[in-house]
Image (cartoon, rainbow, N blue to C red; front, side, top):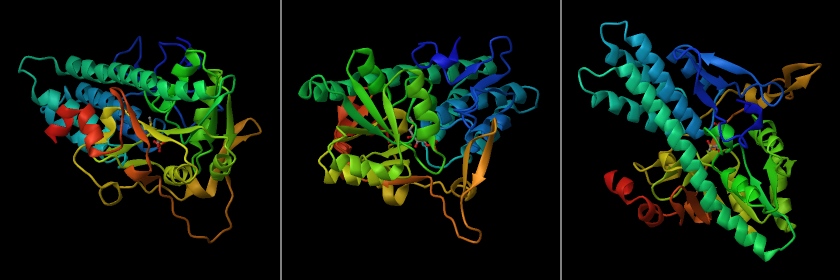
Length: 375
Ligand code: MRU
């Protein structure tokens, strides 16, 4: 499998079982991109937890999938103990503490633990968890593909209004194939549109401090030959004022049942600028990212605070080596909030696997009545 040709290659995946050793899960180490393409082995659930915490894998759906595969690894290990189920439940608690904002983490852990609790006495729990982790990944690919099909309509409509010209999409962070299993959420409509021959150009926010835009989204789009331009995070408002942005599409780590969106820090500022310039601002999400238990993003979502070093240092390639460079005067205080909340009132619509809806309780409940009703 040529993982470099992602996601053009329909077989591309960000996480998979090692073909010749089913006790190992393999991931792409995203901390090394775009300079190095490194596949890493996860041999136990602790390595899975480390990969999530240190962001070797990141992006809400991939965090969830990694947690599911980690519980499979925990079950292999736990099978040699007197209490395999207790062992996996303890692993689920540890995994649940790795990153606080993306709700897919809790969703995936609850789903896998739920499967164990419903299992019969004679069931092979290792196979059961392997199949469940695999299903979560297979479903994510289908979900993202469908987000692409629905979101593509928005791009197509804009394209019809400006024949012969590129549709300019602005995106923030990496809500691409690398953040999911394949296709991405915010990028899925872009890939679907380019596959249909629609002329699309993407403005990629650099996304400080970790630069998921320049390091991951640019890498992805370049490999798929999607025309794109990297901009610093503060350039978006200017481009919008100049009429150079037709639509903004971002991802989300957690969407409340009323449509508030927690996403990478800086998303809120883009939504404000889009509102001021009458530019549609859409958020693409799988239903696994909806937190049906909460309404108010501002008071009810825990916002991850990460290491100050991510702000003080910038990672790059120097002299053939990937290294971190300090950019800050000594003695300054630093704070590093990883996410912010974009209120539903600033969002033009939510692009989901079942269609596009208003960013509102009614909109989400109409598309997902069974999930809205259950919470
Ligand atoms: O801190 P990260 O890199 O995990 O943040 C990722 C994002 O903010 C994405 O936009 C979000 O997870 C959606 S991914 C489809």
